[in-house]
Image 1 (tube, rainbow, N blue to C red):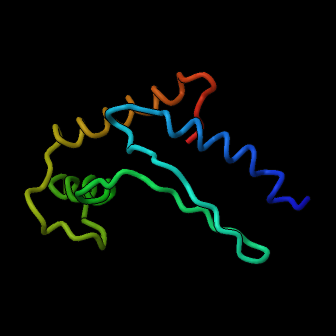
Image 2: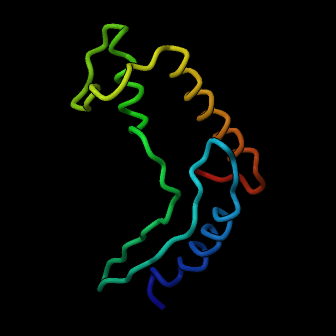
Length: 109
C-alpha cells in the first residue's frame, strides 16, 4: 500500500469531524474530494460561499485611517471600516478559535 493510501483513513476521519462543526463565526464545511493524479493528489474542499472582501483587504483598508498604506488590495469599494467594525470581526475570529480549541478532540486549524 502506498503512502498516500495509508493517510486516507485519517483524512476521511478529519473530514467527518469537520462536517459536524457548527459555529456562527466559522465557514460551513460541506465536504471534500480527493483526486489522485499519478504520483500526486489534489484535495478540493467544498465550503459555504461567503460574499464580501477578504479578511486581509478588510483589515488593511481599515488601517488606512491610521496612516498605514493599503497593499495592492483595492480599498475603493464601499466605506472604510472603522476600529469598531474591525474589532467586531477580530472578536468573532477569536470566538471561533476558542470554539475549535475547546472541542474534544481539539481541532487544529
